[in-house]
Length: 185
Image 1 (tube, rainbow, N blue to C red):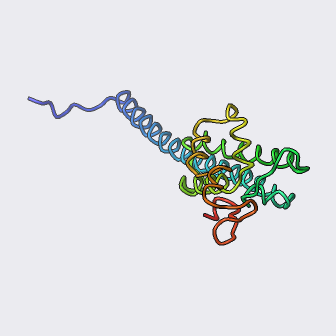
Image 2 (image 1 turned 180 degrees about the vertical axis):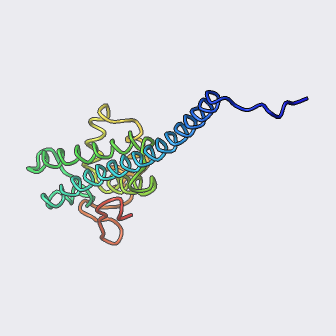
């Protein structure tokens, strides 16, 4: 038979209240940690997207600051090593390839400012319309990932493919337009 007069001693009651309070503090701490982690993730995503946007802006500034190079970077025009602009075009190609490599290497590690399809279209458009970019990548393929080289090859790029299609040096993309960034796709 159960004794109905079993009551908790003051010590037992205080111990029980302390345990319940401790449990509630643990629950509250977990809720706050989850919230803080979400906020930090959002902040990191925003910072990453800002960095990518800044890199995109810097890549676009090549054409703004040196518009005479755009024909080699997106205008389907070839350049020979003996031309005066060759070193500038090579330096610009290296900057663009480094930017593209950042995307290729980091694409699975963070939320992207643009969709993967948009990035690939942007990169492929550059490869398809820049023999100089393709030539630089082929010459320095050990500097870049195999994946970037594969994207170039799949884009139908380079002098050989362009000439097989019947394009002439100096032609523009279809419709005469030149995309300026991933958002243009």
